[in-house]
Image 1: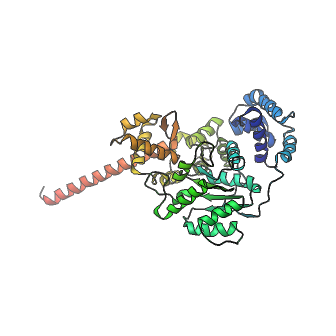
Image 2: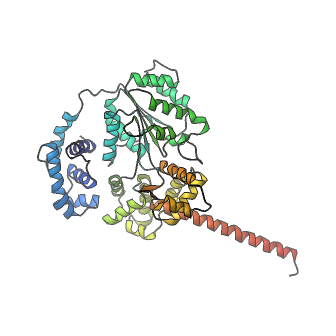
Image 3: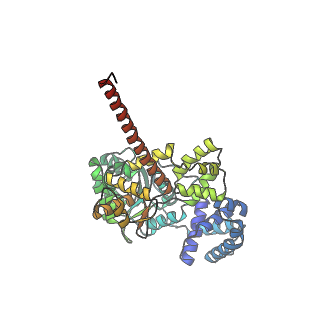
Length: 450
């Protein structure tokens, strides 16, 4: 049994017993015990002190887990206890998929963390029978990896599992020409939405469509399709509103309009805004051989919003420029360079001009701001309605942080935007200097005797 299965069992038992999932430190303890790590090693991986782990939270956690599982559990017998629970909680009615096509799904054999997200998605897909689910988050945050892991864990619950990437923006007819024959086992070749719906009703299917954002429009508010892809929106609306027994799982850098309109409460259409993962980020730092104190590791994770792709990029630079020393890198106080800048460039270029203006003003203030404070600061002034529309759009894009009616950005985003402003100002000054030199040259030509 893999750790993710053990984690799911423990999380399910604790949640059922005391109505809450495992905390970050409890997951760290469980991971350490599962992998026979000492408390010293668990402390190093998690950033928590040995004293706290061994004398405070540790004993409490083993009592909670023992109570939830009905057996006395400790580090030594954890494997045996959880293995006993593996078979009973599995569903004897599980179906073996008759057809699976993983397409371009990524390898998640070393997947780490995201326990709460996996449990939530499992509930939505299996217990709540959601028809349309969107995983939304910044580029590199781990949407595709999470979708792949959940799909692999749940594959035996479905007759058909199909993964397709929209990265190359296939037309809807092209996509349907693959989906319909696959789900019908070649019985049906009609590339029509009504035929897809028919087979989603006939069979229990899991269809994962990765990179939905590539067919969405750039330079405008989030969530709307490019002119040649508006029929995708009609398809997703149909699949969200119509009754069927399947699940469509989307990943995207921004929430699409039909998902925003249809989701809400305990309905059949839902979205999960993905944030960074502490567990996954710390594991990534360790796997890349970076050296530093627990505080330095956590600081590195924080400034990059626990974004796995950003951390992977910066880890390479820390190794090549600073011999893997996190502290030396942090002293440079330069967060944005090379791949990080290109990653943020791609997202920033998709924004409308008004969204970009709001992003700049949030970066200039570098603090949590209310809507009223933002409107008072922004020059040129924009209407209240336009400001609200843009803030919602930026939220759909996962580019701003929201808390109690106030807004801000992640540290790396702030530095990126300040760097953009400095570059723009330097460009303007360079143009002014060039113009001045040209005028001086023209003046000298007009007055050769001076």
